[in-house]
Length: 363
Image 1 (tube, helix red, strand yellow):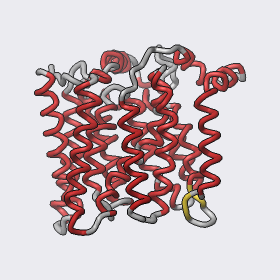
Image 2 (tube, helix red, strand yellow):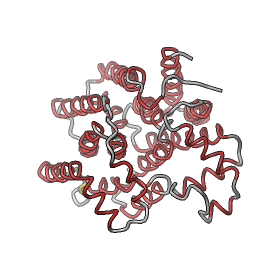
Image 3 (cartoon, one colour):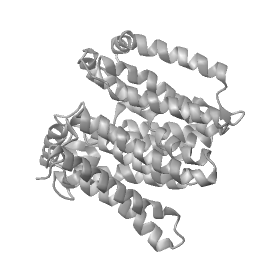
Image 4 (cartoon, one colour):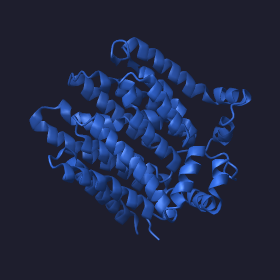
């Protein structure tokens, strides 16, 4: 399949799934559940059917084959050649291998990811145009998971757990982070997100406190290598596996400018239209932290991925933008959001060829 045909296929599959997802508010309960289920299932089948799509596809395919070949007892006891891979991911993968081929494993993992995000959007953010958010999730973050499967799963779990921030349930939020860490250790960086919400006043951080957070985050982004080596020297049991990430890999990081532009647009609209919403303000603050982390992508690709946990609130922000306009202009704003996501996808994956997402192949 050629590059242009692949682009069309991606857009069609995700747009059709989003159309089905839009039935989440239909009065017919059976139709509502069926359409949302299909909206999750179709992208999962699409992800499972792929062949050598995503830079790390071969690695995961080999790992699944290896895990299939060893007994469950060895996986549970962590007596495998993949001891550096997160325990939860090994166990889940082993269980999924009983259901079918490696393609089935890829598909079920994708189903879990998209399912968690879909359920979270419907239950926690249904007052917004969440179809736009789901479309953005599929086009950007779900597709990115074709390359970073483990982190894609962890990212979906963390997004699902963000509800506990606004419900002031620290224990449950920590538990979600720990569960997500069983699939990718990087999720611990999402722990500070809990404090982006002022739990005493039930609002986002004020400007002065957030300014301090930006300064601290900037310091961490600048000196992360030294801090990382300090953690290694202190003997943390799992952190040493990422030591190779200290090496520059001459990354292009072109999507940084897209992320920065999106952030600027959201901030301008939020302030100019005078739409005061403390939850959205907190999510904007989180997204700004992601832009800082994403700057590391100019010299090393892997570190900027840590920012994904602070970037994924973008799907909520995009869902909310149409609500900031007058009622007669909301549908136009919604369609502009959809168009912006398509442009984002085209630039990130079709034009620059990031993560070997295009061309899409089946075998």
